[in-house]
Length: 444
Image (cartoon, rainbow, N blue to C red; front, top):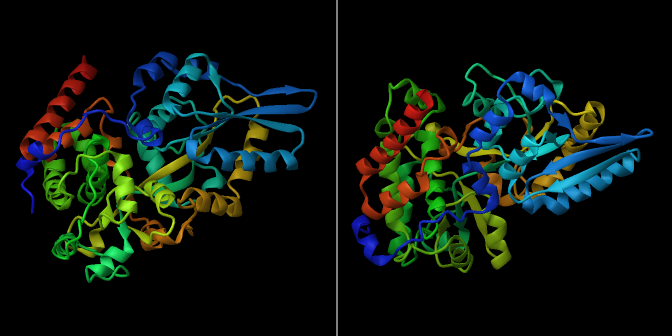
């Protein structure tokens, strides 16, 4: 195994977070904007939906955050407009959803219907009353209850009394690792029976290494990528309920994230000799057969296939303990569908939402976007996802660890330092110091 302290000599990192937009959106803080726009309920009521109407014709504004899904949503809109010739959908595509929404909220221009990333900023907006409350709505009756819970938990980060669903899960994603099936077989491993415990996983990495194959493709030149395996491990090791103890002062980051950090350090001992490459380079290298696994989210698989359409891959959950029954898949509401709380066209907005939530349309969307449908009978949009589908169906999913801390905390940079030095105590101390400083400012 590699010595963590030797990595400083082998590579250096830019220290800049250049993660793709859909991932970057999860880490942006917009609390101050929400406070400015929605200082009270009266302010929320003042916000008006942007749709227009003339002589029986209605135009809805549809805010669409997902860059990769532009063509798919255009197709869906075209189908809806064909069925409803009196309703026009004005699609607003964006590459920076958090910033664009903040600007619109400040200007009192809330779109009628929105797709939003199911990350921390959704919780901020939801708790501020920007979105419609679907908690008791029959539209959620057939939705995976754990996916709904993830939405509620995000809102509760900002309003602990609000056990409410301010959106509808539209598509699910997952964290873990991509498996090069052929390389696993070459190392004498069975890709149809992937590791179900931490010990089995480490044993597999050692066997792959002994076969002369690089086990893990790292991409540490971009620090955000270190959060992926960390979140995967934390999903099993740190129950969501533990994060409330941080605010209550009954737990520390050493308690919650110390064990996760120790496994993260061990995990990265099995990367290539120089893991300080970019996300793009790592994707290309993995696609070209230079490593057995790529530890990122489901979003990376289509990019791998763009480089090598013939690669044989599976997606797997990263186990964190030695009890198979304890394993939880780190996953999230990749796309949330919601309606402005103050839209001028609630009937037409609802019609459009129900059109989008059609099961056949969502299956087609899942296939185009390499994701999961949000239903109780969850459908995986690609054969490579079948290995982790049972986690969704069994409700064994947990949100990403970074959703439970303020986005102003430098988690990625702290993880980079952890992997450079191997110093778990310094990592947890850094996170605790940042947390305490933010809490002190909040109290003041």
